[in-house]
Length: 266
Image 1 (cartoon, helix red, strand yellow):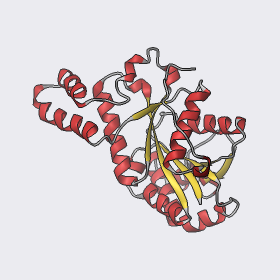
Image 2 (tube, helix red, strand yellow):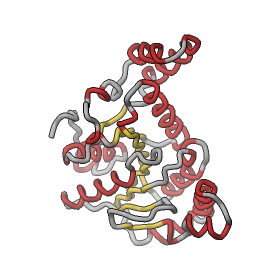
Image 3 (cartoon, helix red, strand yellow):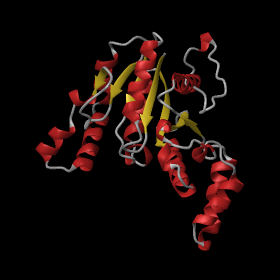
Image 4 (cartoon, helix red, strand yellow):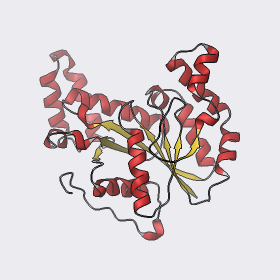
């Protein structure tokens, strides 16, 4: 049984920084993880790359040879990966043991994990290779400055959850850049009545019914909640990692335990 994190989220949400910090944390705690680059447009890494999609296809080559733009070129690269998944994974994964832990650093184009099947098919291939997979969705905490941006983030996250059908962990990244932590605390586990009141204050009256439906969707089904991540604090990284480990049943024999995490703790 293998284990994997699929690190997704909008461009600029801190996915590569998260992967780098996670690798450094695991290196410090003498735990082994392997970070895989799935972004054909990536250039520099702050972590050792265990597997690299650019060895199969790169965005620069596609743009030059086919005359495509960045977005069209990326879609071509990911479709090419999809067509060659079996051979690529068979070749790359043969170097890893059954209990290895892989972290996939994905591109930031939102359509890849909201309404096209590329990453979903990639996940299905991993499952057939006997991997337990968790989607880790990063959202920049600096965008959580008002309720409308929060709802937009929730909808994107929900779309990814529906598309991928995986255990799903939502993370508010870049908490170290938030001046006042209380500004985002109310969005970690929101209540429908609070969301509805805030939405009605920010939006025109004709959106009242839509606001009510969105607030109830977030609250009633408990589908969206966020974990704050402050990369300056080892306790924050460890908490997030333990939470994800629990989702994919990593270290079950070790009886993984999760305690409440206070973002104000060191």
